[in-house]
Length: 339
Image (cartoon, rainbow, N blue to C red; front, top):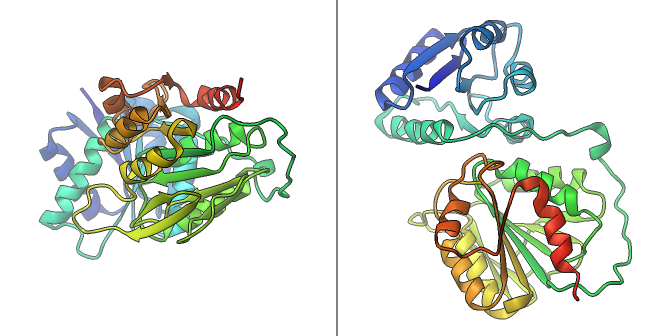
């Protein structure tokens, strides 16, 4: 049965989330620690299957513990902290956390408990993933190389949810400089985080220019466009339309909306990729892409943090290839070169 480690220095908060976790029935054993040092001891002793981690703790902070955990005993981690700034959220995701939940002023409410249980479900069904980000990955001078080969695809669209930021970084680095096709990314992410995500990606790749998409942007070679949070991205020929999402929308940004809008125009010259994530977003869009003779690649379960969205496409037989994240880049390059 699954064991959950809670690393939290506040007695009240630690007890509250312990009660929620036990009542959810998702974890059979709850292990607690009040500091990062104690968290290390409990990890070594009890071998937990997942972790809820605060960032602000005495002596060893949450980021230090997270680095140790991902190096020595990687497990899915949910950050639960009042320090939910954009930089902290993306830093936690880069270091290996699968999700981030902010502590609100009155966070122990019925509505919040429901939200917390949904996060616990993702945590229970996730696998850890790390991405190595070294100094040489950052602040690279952008260079351009002429791409003389004619490429098969005129547009690449990537959709992702839980675990997506690290998967997208891995994928972009693997194709950086090898193809110049415009790339559009729909990552389920809140408003304001997508602009920072774009900046982070822009510092990691050398040959691409990564930006948060603006309304009426023209799709250009060697550019990567991130759909803004709380919006949908529609492909209208060679341009992008950004439209606000509705409160009734299940997924934002919607991968289906972007896939479907591009399928009729780009037809066989469209390559769609669905990475890790919970839910069914992308299935309807993949169906339309296949109906228009486009190509669909999905991430395989061994590398997915959550094998949800790719699985839904697989069971409906709407994919052409299913590969671990480390091999998707090579497949994109291979398929992109026209015969």
